[in-house]
Length: 397
Image (cartoon, rainbow, N blue to C red; front, side, top):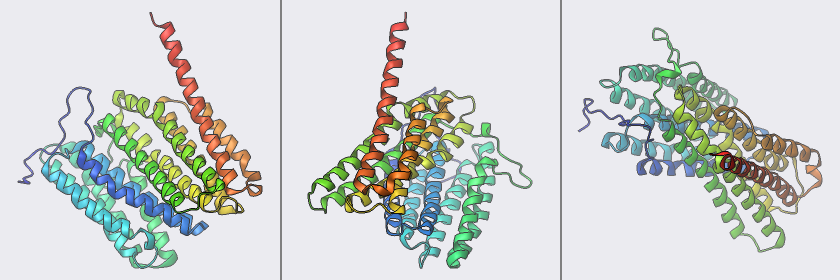
């Protein structure tokens, strides 16, 4: 049933992109849980070290997901072997996600083993699937597997270590894994892969990453709704809830009103989709998703303590979440359409101007202000887009 003579690759026809399959969506459910664990972990440990640890774990979670996204860009999830591979990864992903709250404590080895199993196991499956059918991509995965196995040493040794040693070893492992794509996975004796070697179906890649943005936004709404439901119905709590909802809608609007579709069209028509997929989706989507997660933490703080003082941690998440998101979306547009929107730069400037006065505000009013910045960016983007559409219509013959 699983003979390597069976071609498990997707069939590519014309310019239509592969639809995202139900098993891919099912696989993503694990990462809804993972994003929730990360945001709750940061909320409980809102310190510089807590931010560093949560950031490192976030990078690992994203890396597992995006590498799987690349795999399903080439291999057909409707094939039974690929589907079973995804289900096995889901099970390992649950063990990885369950270990997140205590990854820097007693469950470090569990996290490391689950992560390495997912990375090396998935890549080894691709080697088996591609060996007889795609020699070029097979060679690419030989390089990738070598890099992941090498970084896996530091993940496992870090899991066996404690304290600062674990953090240093895992940081080194993350650095190795993130350097791999940009270096073409250069391997002694095999050289490096060129971006043109990666035959990427751009529409599928764009849709998968857009769905991860939806996952992060969904987690944000889940946290906000669950927190608000447990609070007494007061004017301050209702105001903070409204601000949080407006922020989530604005972030959705900024990404999906025009940027996501235009980027999908650009990568589908690109002469080097591998390079664009690596830059815009593998790397640049990181700050987009991170910004949503940090914003969700700020929203929960504003909901639970709407009229309290704004300490440094609260100010950083309330200002930093929208700032990271706007910076990420600006970079995404720069990579896909060639320029960063002025509205995003204006939004970042507005957030910077709020920083000196944040300490004199309450979490509720600061949340209102940052949400107002996001609403203004989304609104100005929409007005500009509609104006361009009217101009295009009137100038058409």
